[in-house]
Length: 195
Length: 195
DNA sequence: AACATAAATAGATTATCATCTAATTAGATA
DNA sequence: TATCTAATTAGATGATAATCTATTTATGTT
Image (cartoon, rainbow over all chains, first blue to last red; front, top):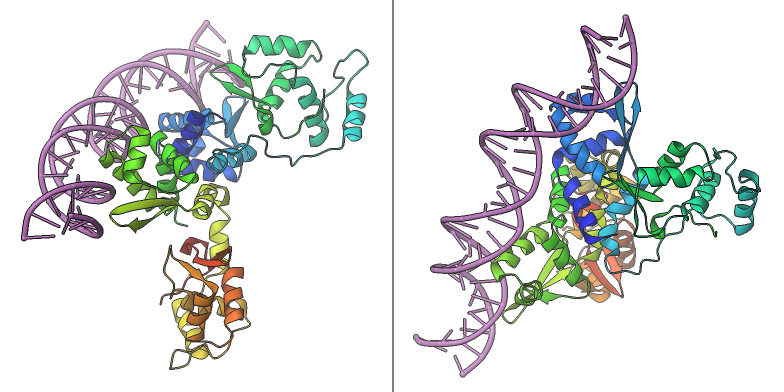
């Protein structure tokens, strides 16, 4: 992680209002107006704060009809909060979500066709991570991609590009900033399979 | 930990200059002028930042002649950095370990003699914590003690120094590293009584 | 006692930022 | 299409804070 991303994160949560928002979202997603009401602040103020929190990656959102719900990404929060503790350390760090290579192969054989297409998205978390990790390696590290480019790549192996894109971001394989997509360092991935 | 302490901490490290100071001190203590020189800033600016960092408790200082060396308290840094992850379950924990002042007084009256000696170690957890918290305050924050010094202090109020020492460490009142003992920040104590 | 050095304080300047009101955009529904 | 609702953007204001120079304090040394 770059230093300025780390600083932005600590600056973002170094504010009473934003801490309160994080605290609220810990117990579940909420939409903007609900947050504004609970905190006694105006909607534009909430937008302002949500933007800062979202920029750090600890928040993601989903629209349901007219209402946008904001979710806290607990894993990302933990990763970011402990960044200062890793200052100066070797980048090779975490490995919690483990699966044996043979099991990974089994998963890939059951979800990827002979033509290399993803037949369906696994619903079981670990299995899903295996295929997400496998396909995300088609991107280059350090390169920025437009949403269009991401979609086009996904379409070479699966039709539901929006779902795959969302999963990559949600599970920290990729990072989105101002409409651009970027591969996260492998240390941030919840699971890595050989390709 | 109080919310405002937590916010001050994140605000403190949410600044490029202060992150750089923390980063420098990770590799060892430095004095003000050295930091100023390394960062290309003026000494008053460094004083300003050190004050903010010191207020969070992650820094302590020792004077040698007329130079003051600043040290990073790594354990405290870790405790503070992960505070946001404990948001919400903290009040529960504290409540669990809460005891009214009058009840604390009762406990102390029944286990501490008129001469200030601990007659026996309470077996009930909460009561034990009350007396442990009471006596541990004979130590100074930020100071390192040898096992010998700890034993000698315990002997002023109780004969079984090994048991008391072990309890202090086990319940996070103190921290042991390479044979040295150090008082943990009060925020880490499971319970605090007035002395 | 006089001097030297490191740190801290005081006060000024400039930049950043939290919040608001008013206006606009985006999506859903009738 | 017109209308409703939620979110965002634009722009203003007041507060906070990062940095500097100049001065003072604290401690050591000659």
